Length: 558
Image 1 (cartoon, rainbow, N blue to C red):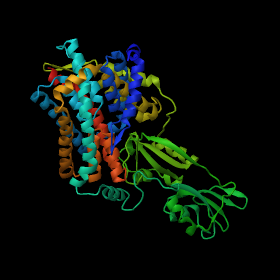
Image 2: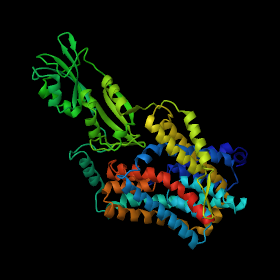
Image 3: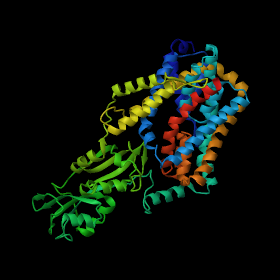
Image 4: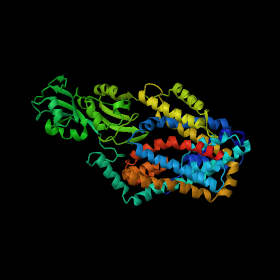
């Protein structure tokens, strides 16, 4: 243990490694996760008075919270519309309930500000609140340095216990109990909603992929299409295929819509596999690959930046841009907030969505410029990211007094807001400010893990006394602060807002920012349909919940 005291970098990375190892332990559908595991390990090591400089904690928390905001920015602002207002109501219920319960418990049991904030962070299963609350406690002017250290330690300890019970409660309540309360089989309900979204046609679930490629190319010998033009042939197949090449004898012809096909022509078509299966009935027998008719399919990831596209369905987008049909370009995937959404005709697009387009390269390039910008994420723009964190840190230094209560966003709140704005601004142009998703995720996870490890090491000496004093209260608080807002949201969401049941269950997991819960829900549903509700509330709550830490600290510390 002396080695860890003398070399804090060893202690820090040991906490990360051992913590994530503990976080992998599974009991039924429940895993603690790396963050909670790291906090447990660091608390244990911290009892031996091993510590890391506070500046390390501040720097990594700024990296975490900025990356979190940057990734959520495009969808956060996209969700500020009338259509998403009903989902915002669920987030508002979450905020009011957790703040009210935490404040009530603090007054009823005479809890110190650190314990109350830790209960709020843990029961809401929102790790970012630990950082914003800890920072806010450090700015309370009427506390001594010893009290600040003690209360900041209480945040981490209360968070650990409440997180454990809150996590178990939200996972079981959303994935097991809510479907029973709604009297549905979640798998059947998700499949029915998915089929409804697809226009009543049965098909793959949102999280499934075809064993055969969705977009393919085939070559046919003209026997039945003799005398028909290329345009007529494409129309006969519903506009879901494109003629990419025609070979007549030894000559390669340009497949213009007016070109008339003749007997024994060789025709290469590209399109959705379901349409190409029917092509033989219109053209003639399929043939092996023909030299010269081997047009490759190109793939491009395009971020939606066109203003008119936001709020439009995929079907509407394809009708607005005839290039989809004329050039044989197809949308095969929609990526939003690191979640893959169904690329069905009824899927509503938002600014910042990343579409995977597949088609012949010429048509693909013409279309990309009209609907968005090619995503270039092969390097990080550190100029943009650096100035973003600087702006957030400066914003966090502003203090506003509400009556006698000084309110400040702090570094955490400031970097969260700057991350949202910088991420949103990047999504509108995509020509600067590159921050690859893998890099952003790594910085986010690493930043939070290091911050939590530093917090746990500092809190270790205060952990055992707090557990002895409030041992029974913390589990109760963790369970109550999950059940109360989730139950209210279930009733309001169904009775008043009329949200579809699978989407509602996913949205309630999102208002709690619980990734383990949505993972369990999608496993029970055997579908990713609940993710459509989860992504909206998750994005909103990811911004709003971290702000509850300074609010609670400011009110209780006044």
